[in-house]
Length: 128
Image (cartoon, rainbow, N blue to C red; front, side):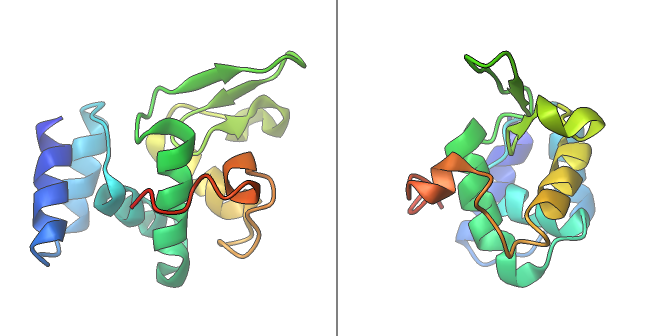
């Protein structure tokens, strides 16, 4: 939690933390804020141009909690920061980096957010 707070404060003051700071916050199971999610997205291979939207989607989906889970009425489960559905097999993981990589892959690098209901409904907007 302290790592997420530090990340949030640094971003608010225009300070760019090294990638290791983002990784450290995630490895301790802490909740990530928008700056941490943007950094994680980029570390996972996502484009910097899509990082802000990716962070907003993750905040709408999981509130930045890597262990977030949602059981759906059709028997599937959404897991992790970007709530990757279990239909994606091994891509559906609670591991923050694995979940971010899955989001990059499924969204085609941040160019197609239609698999996320929070994006389709506009619920992601204004989360960051």
